[in-house]
Length: 333
Ligand SMILES: [Zn+2]
Image (tube, rainbow, N blue to C red):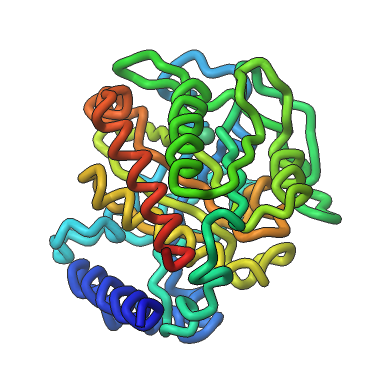
């Protein structure tokens, strides 16, 4: 009964979201075939925490660090579908190496995706969660392959963005939230491992993924925060691989289910704008994973109000509860 209830709730959620943004038919249609997906996809600037510049000295440069998706208000569930902006970002704003990026709002095409969730109804005590607090004190601009066998080389790890109002570094926020999330998940019975618990480390994105693989994690949750050159952009989004990802396409269904569970629960707990679960196939830390993986972009540190909110103790608890609730939902708990 519980499983059935979750499936029904998932369907209702998908329908509600689709109707609310007024592009129901268009959206679902775009998922029917790879061909239509290719033509109708929302092209976004992908999160760049894995390849941004090491040095971040101005808000503009920081915005290079993570998602810059000023185009993409279409996917915002603001109930204002008539104001849909252009779907594609001008090419000149998109660095050459990001062109393979595919970013789409995830609307599961049917319930089989939800039913395919691994580990449903499992005892949390047997579930291993790896939390990867994104970035570290100093980035490492040496290169590593973007995926197994890939000729594309990206920076091992970058230093992340910085809060425009608080001045707090992303790697500090990421670890702060991650440590509190660890405690919350352990209180709920999960087995939790961290890729780092201090700032002064040097662990590449590939190595972070390999760590989750090595401990046979059931899921890997990568904690990041976002930045944009557009200070008005705000909200939470999550990322997983697409089904056509050449390295981890087989993990797409589970990863996107996880991504959707978390983004929905997080938005509900925080009141943050729900920017949806999206796909990205250029993230080293995703491409090297052998377990379902999601990147949680907690919010926009380039938005002053959201930056300040993410330093508020009460809000941080909401953020943590939201992520934990999403993980519970993914596992059917
Ligand atoms: Zn980041």
